[in-house]
Image (cartoon, rainbow over all chains, first blue to last red; front, top):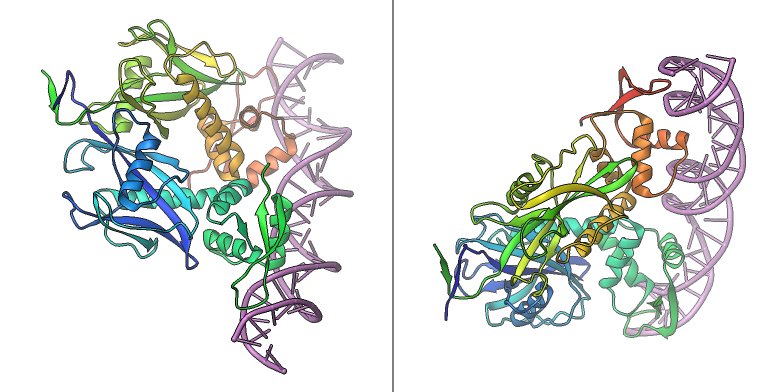
Length: 220
Length: 220
DNA sequence: TCAAAAGTGTTGTACCTACACCCATGC
DNA sequence: GCATGGGTGTAGGTACAACACTTTTGA
């Protein structure tokens, strides 16, 4: 089967930056490419958009095929379309960002991936295509969301937290995202004033010391 | 001439939201479509990306062809790719935003446009394709930039101002963007503290009353 | 001389920051 | 019983909001 058009057309792909906070560090999910170009190199998961699917659906499909992650919320970052960004020809890609909790981390190889692994964003391997640029832009966007407005800052941070969390867990996430430590009492005052947080009545288990109260972001 | 590919490919276009503040209101530049689909309807200027040009270059080329505007800075908004957004088939578009001073306003028809005109964003005609959605997203992005951080707020506002401006002109732009009036003294304190503003020594002319000092954003 | 916009300081308030000790639990 | 993280209030400083009158020019 082949397809003929009156004018030349580019290919369109999606790429998905999956961020998580693991071991107190911001990490990103990368795949090892199974096929040329850049076979064996690390890359952001993604692939070609099908004709009948939305950009977001295509991104989710590729993400599941290559890493096993499914059903996560995506935000669009931007499109990349330099004419020479892909050696196969003109390929325009739409980059997405996903923020997941450290629990959701099943990463495996798939149809187009030899392997999938988490990397700390400050210890990255060399990346295929212009993916280093895309990743840098994604990190910058994340930093902007965190520092820009109080409201966005929280929205971003809660994406990295499970539904029920202790105040210390929340503080660690905020500190990791902002890159600086905060005062415990001030953080708690800020969080409970600025956000609708409710005590679930439950206590954390498995800790090696005094259990902490579990809180939840109250649905509007 | 025709082009054949092993897999089907979408077409890719760019669309450019050109905003300006005219008569104290936020306005947007639209074109009247010369050809089907949506012939005669109003639309955001834009068109197909050529194979050898960058997305931004394509957007600038289309903008000049359809409206006569050239050489203005563009920021990417996002990509739109719903499978049914264009009756001609699968068309993915990358939307850009431009902010221009009210002086730069030459608008004319062009190759694909019967006419080009400014519209206040709260008095829009019906729009072709999903352009009403794109325009709403662009306005929302603009509002976010203004309110999100002090720094972005200024960056956006200065794009709407000429190189030399009076403090009252600046205040009107900020007020239009924020949608609320500000205290004159507080605004001036804020502007001069938060930004590097210098008095050019010149005075505004042509005003019907007392001339005002002309200021300039000091280049870093 | 009148109308219209330009220009100019002070005071209260609300929010953010800094700071230290006791408590509950697991080992 | 001791080590470890959980939990709590106050005081000072700073940045923002509210507020009115005099000055300069064109007509």
